[in-house]
Amino acid sequence: MASWSDFAADEPRLADGIRLLMQQYGPGFGYLATVRADGGPRVHPVSPVITDEGLFCFVIDSPKRRDLERDGRYALHSFPPEDSDDEAYVAGHARPVTDRARVARLAEIGRAAPAVDWRLFEFSVDVAMLTRRDFGLDVPGEAPRRPTVQVWLDPRGEGGSRTRADDTAVSDPWPPHREHDPQCTVAA
Image (cartoon, rainbow, N blue to C red; front, side, top):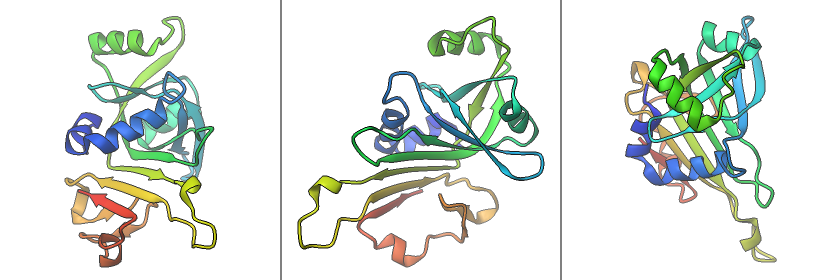
C-alpha cells in the first residue's frame, strides 16, 4: 500500500490534479465510500486533508467511522466542479493515526474542532484516477472528444494482480487496447 506521499512522488502532476479537484472549494470536499458490515456500500460527504505528509480524514463517531475501523477499505471521489465534469478518484485502505503530535499538527491544518469526537485516519493509495472532459473543444459535425483519463496503480499491489479504477481485477500488465489508447494513460 502506497502513501499519498509515495504516490505524489511517483506521479506529481496526477497528484496535483487530484489535490486541486479535492480542494477546489478551499478545504477538501469529496464523497467517501466505505464498506458496511453486510458488505454493501455506504457513501458520505467528507473533508479530506491533503498535505505533503499524506491523505487524511477526520471522521466523527458515525457508521462511516465504524466501517473504516472494521474494514478499512475506502474510495474517495471529488465533488463535481461547477464549470466542468472533471473528476478525481482515490481508493485504498484507511488506518487510524495514533501519534498525538501528528494528530495535533493535522488537526490545526484541517481546523478540526477539539470538542468533537473525531478520529484521524490516513488513507493509503492503491488506485488514483483523474478524468478531464474538454466538452467546450468539440467541433460541430465531428464526433465528440472522449475524456482524458489518467490512472495510477500502486506498483507494489498485492498478489501480482491489480485492480482497475472500476474495481475490475486485471492481470499485470493492462490489456493492450488500454496501453495504446491516446485518451487513457496508465502509470504504474
